[in-house]
Image (cartoon, rainbow, N blue to C red; front, side, top):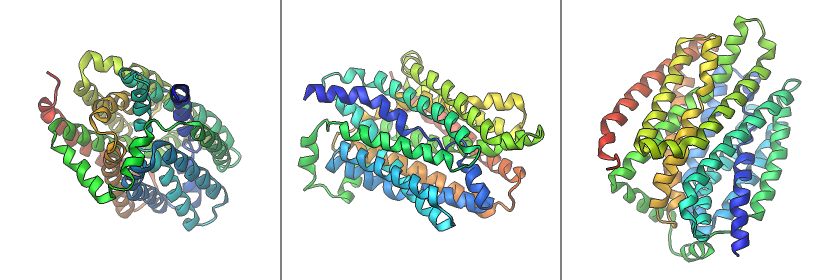
Length: 402
């Protein structure tokens, strides 16, 4: 059994890399934009986030009740099916269904991946390694996206769907890895399956927020899910606008691919250093730094469209790289195993719900497809980020480590 559990730790970075090998990421916005107007593109993204919201907590409950391995296998199957549909989609409804299945894959992974790694270290008696292993897994996450960005962009140059062919192949590899995983604590799921319902589980998790430190950390996680997705959502049209200034619009898929790859490589390095930074300035200091950096990226994208600012936005994924391991190390070990995936899913639910609402509002009020409309959205995101950052800084003393 020990050997099988050790295999979990060996395979997990590969799982993280393959799960986040989003070959479609450099071109998905451009792909959708080639089929639909901006309002419908944003509506498709809103459908995705709303679907994740709908499935976040049920998937976390499923993980806590029936096991981490089964949940991760299900996530892989959802991704495989989604990519097949994207390849054959020829209508808005088909794209919407593919988005829903993609959301299911993301939701079933959310919270379960962190729980699986933590519980594997606990089962092996090496829980003190969890923080650093989470940092290494986060690095693998960004490296997987970086490599996928290069090949996805190249595959998409003749046809955007080429990126989804590679995504499907990667999802098959992901499924093989999850089938080789070993459930860390099968007795927990076997015990809880017959006695804890979804509503009771959610109520119990919400009750944990009476802990003021846990409440602040969860509020931070929700805020950053929204902020992290703003530059993620609009960097492709940002690069396209920059390319139009230099009259190289046809090279946009390659440019977005290279930009994504460089961004992920920088973020991978930051992720590997995140626990060291936490040890130097504390968890709260590290998280506040990440929030400030993300706000700076949104501000740059709003105010400037030039080569120097494009270079600066290579840091746009660094906030997530910096915050992920310290945040998970501060939250996950303090949640009972029988509630862990549900609690983490609740965090993601409220964050994604916030961003889904933001996208829906953007889609409703934006009247055109031009860059002026997008820069207005970035401006709104910038001001919302300023307000949120001020609140976090003002309230942070109540949760700082003594």
